[in-house]
Image 1 (cartoon, rainbow, N blue to C red):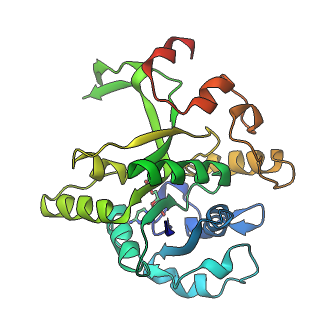
Image 2: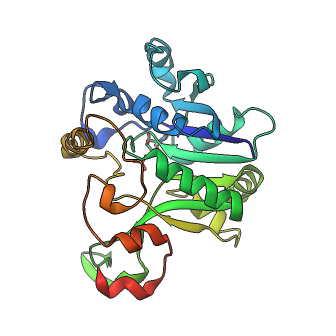
Image 3: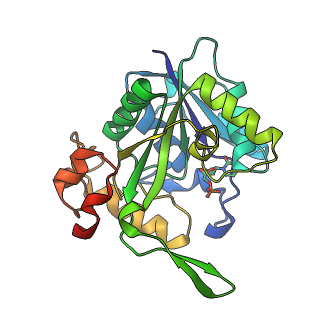
Length: 264
Ligand code: C5P
């Protein structure tokens, strides 16, 4: 199976309020987008990585030193669009011929562990579609007009992360349907779900956070430095993660069953 990845870095990052575009904010001395690329490139099965950047930052990206791991797997960067889904479409259009599986990853998640990337790729190779996710810690409320409209059953609630990995033909079909119907998703799996296709859930790492708010930058730095000077933990169990929580059996199980909910 030939696997490629998209690294979506075309968001404006307005919630961060930084002077530098979000993708270029440093994490342990390298831009977030480079850290995300390194994590994907560490997987031998990922043969090509297409970075998607704001049109105004393509030159800035091209000027980055190419001395990072995985630079040899980089395709020409492409310009993203107004919405994340537009950026994903632009990235898909730039994939080389003959790719079977595509991993779509947010540049804003530079802390993903290569081991988890490998697990979600393996799941998608089996099933056609898979994502990384973690069980939520909080009880989720649906809120309308400042009032609780509904409480979601926590044992069934998982927070979706990236990478999300799909058979390329399936994702293209899902994107075409969404566009024909004017549907805009907040993640890619949502588009595939709308086809009625199953999407497998692979339990990831809570430390694979999406850098969104200013305080997330300091948190990401702390997680990074706690990972033995930048060395990635080799295992997939949460016990080996820099973010100790939960039972390791659930971390290894990757089975999104509601039965363990009460233990959280
Ligand atoms: O918007 P959100 O925070 O969910 O963005 C997740 C990822 O999608 C980020 O890495 C961001 O750079 C990317 N994105 C993009 N193009 C957009 C909006 C977001 O590539 N128009």
